[in-house]
Image (cartoon, rainbow, N blue to C red):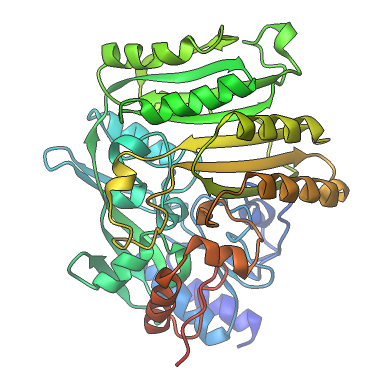
Length: 457
């Protein structure tokens, strides 16, 4: 199909805005979160509803063009934008219907985690997403969702009741545990391989005031290993995401801490404030806090602490599931961070378990229920020509952290290749996903993702 004919057909077929390269706003529309992603799609369609989505999917399929789907645009690999293809931009689909009495919400997938959380908080309710409010709920949910409520209420997909999905043939399917259960299993962890999710039904939980915020401690082997041990032993109401890094010149830190290795622990106790005070007191005793910003707050406030700053120009990052952070592991982390030449080098540790671990490993496509810790390492830098140096550092760091069976969280993958994608779906999970992929997308239209090719008999 001629490009001009396709764009003309799109303008006729959809109610949303169709943005071609020559139009005002094109460069802004093609930009995603990560600054090094610089792709020029043939056309971007800011869809207005699921009918628009269906028509764009069908026309892209007929034209044989690459199709990108963007919710919030935070894909580390830049999957939210295509080079020369068609982009479905969901950001205008932001409707949210909260049924406070029945404890569920229907949310369109152009919403961000922060927008959804702020709206639900008006009822004293919440669904757990990740740790960044500007991330779109579409891609985050499809990959799993590991955030501030993971130990108390599980992964985001553990709170997914139903979804509306546009498949490769343009059909709109509502899927849940009884309707298209194979598809429902696959989209809970299998990413965007199976269609365009346009609407999610989530469970809501009573999460009003929390004890939450940032606790900054000196980074020593004993502090790091003890913090992880205490986070595992803590009540399930407490979820901890700890960033080990060189302290930047943040205004709330004393000057003598700038440039020193610190543990920046983001903490959320989703329960009674008094009980939260007792749980967090244990961490305050690990060492004299450099900064203590943990306090009673409304749940959405925690996202405000993780936002801000310029778009990254360059970043190298890897992730791996591990099962322990003892003193030796902590020393390994500190040694590698000290060796980095990046302006910002970080090792992140998310302590898992609790509600996430109680879901059977075969219940969803997320196959890492028994892993205790999610570790991630990353280097953020200003000069793209230095990428190779930082890639070597990240690769060596990851190799030093590996423990037992390989495993990776699909939402934290970049352009890692098929071997790493397979690590996200170990054992029979990969074959099961590939079989379902063949059923709903036999020609792999939805391939601009951490791709699972359809099983060919």
